[in-house]
Image 1 (cartoon, one colour):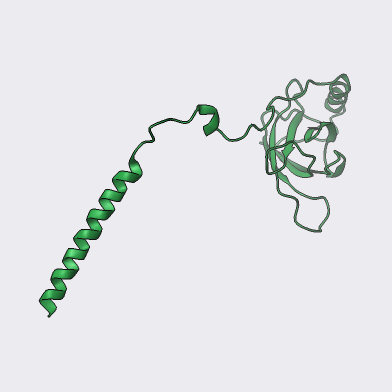
Image 2 (image 1 turned 120 degrees about the horizontal axis):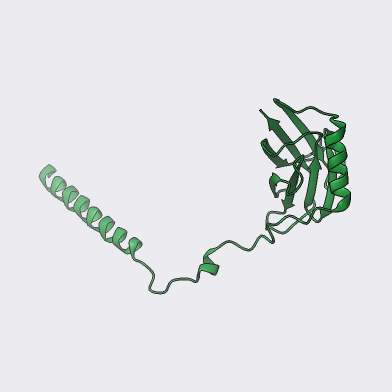
Length: 168
């Protein structure tokens, strides 16, 4: 009886191995028609360009640099910004350009810094809404960073955020 069982077990093992290999070959097969490149890309996230620097923004940036109010050399600074573009706490001046577009200016050049942002609330209540945040050096303004916020679908949305700038 045990010999019969061993033979059946070996036959089943070979059958499973054969089906596994055959199934793997099918899974690797290429589709006959390739999807267009546009269809393979995620949904468009809108524009990835920054709005032009306004005269008011340039004036405020120059004033902040000349005032040297905050020295950020070898330091870290943070700012918490509400969804409407007002600063809740921290260092810096906030300018809101449009839906989900913010500029945060500092009293020193930050272009060589490290910028980290996350969606967040200014208060200690609740979990912030889901969304995305991007941060980059502000074009033509060496003492500022540009922040964009979007909802989870990728549409620009006004969301509060926390920003950390580290200079070393």
